[in-house]
Amino acid sequence: MKSSKSLATTIASALFVSMFVPLAIAKPDSVLFTSTPPVIDGLATDAAWEGEDWHGMTSLMWGTAPEPSDFSGRYKLRWNKDALYLLAEIQDDHLSDTYANPLERYWDDDCLEIFIDADASGGDHLNNYNAFAYHLALDNQVIDIGPNEAGEAVSQRYNDHVKNKWQRDTQAPYKIYWEAAVRVFDDSYQHGKDNPTVTLKEGITLGFMLAYCDADGDDREHFLGSHEITPVNGDKNLGYKDASVFGKIILTK
Image 1: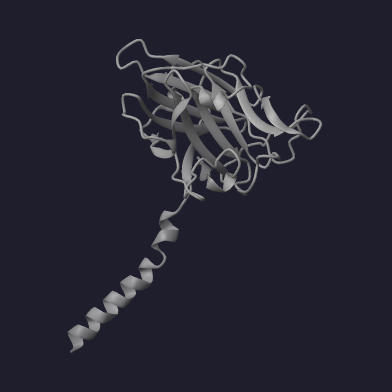
Image 2: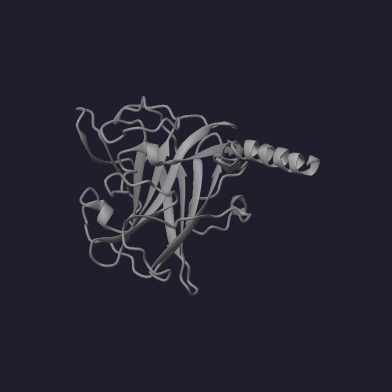
């Protein structure tokens, strides 16, 4: 009888503790500090990238799931006070830039998409600068939708926000290494004005997500990202307008 009571107490204690386990697990991804930022040249040889802290890009957001030889990707992040640094390693057997005008259907060309929310507040960002969804094109231009100086939400260049460069490896399987330095702006940003950037510090939490638009000669066929999205009316392609689907990263040293 004493043994049964002890077992029951043990089980009850375990159940009580398990109620709090998700809170312990659901921590933001940690991003490591770098005292020497990487050179944005698409070579991925900088000391800043040392380590095995890769994150996958496996969550299907739109279209069909590709074969790994068609597309697969992973990435790393670093930071200092000036910028968030990204290295993406991508396997893509066909690069496509169908639309010459960088503001025309840029999502239907191959591009890397960086989602960033300076205060991790989530919410709508289609018609404001609550967050950004930077589309990094194959010509290294950076495109997103946001209010222009007249207050109209249109596709615009944000080339001064993200310095980026990619190169394809010369050895099989000919992976692409895409590097970027992202300057972070908060929701006070006004396009065409002189805007201060957010000074990044240890302990800051940012909203973040990464995705890749894969087009194989026509329009986009696959869209895979770093975070699983709960569909709304069957739709997972929500990041371009709703920062609530982003993940969270915390800057650490």
